[in-house]
Image (cartoon, rainbow, N blue to C red; front, side, top):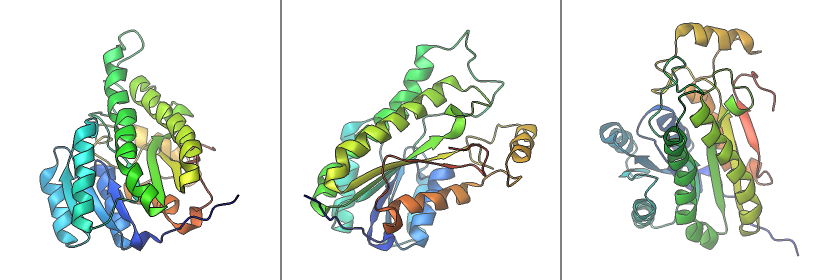
Length: 260
């Protein structure tokens, strides 16, 4: 028997963006706010910038601190957001990134790569996404609508710089994206990934040498490096009614460098 679920327009959604106090996450939060959504600006340490963004969007944004690796803290954050907006979170963008610098010279090479490097990334990327998803599921199911958007990377398709730990965690997140989409589809919940390459410029890519930016730009059909704002705009598609029949997919947003 076929089921029909609501496809809420973005301006009727309550969106949690993890790691939205700075960098790419803040661009994503701004993109949703520009479309009229109500937004939970999650942060770990960037309190001032997160609160400033919420203050600039009074009544439509709230800044809430939570470590996404802590299931209890995530649950408390979702409950506080629900009380604040008098409705559950319907949309999640799993953007939070454990401390990481895209500096190829400083990365752990194969001979010194330790499990602790991978464990740190898996904790933040995979466990964080699992915690937010599980905390939001009851509200999404009650609303008959849910959108989970995971932030990935094109490095597992084109490891131009072999960041072993970061790339492995994001690859695992893609697998979780696909399996969750199968599990949650009957509830009217879609799960997708938006994968970027090197972005000009975020806090994480601030250590990237200019020569690398130039190399990436020259290799893309658009001959430029994607900006955080351009990447953020692409996440809106998976939250919008236009993607209501799209789930388990990975959209690469990197100026055409990687063909998915």
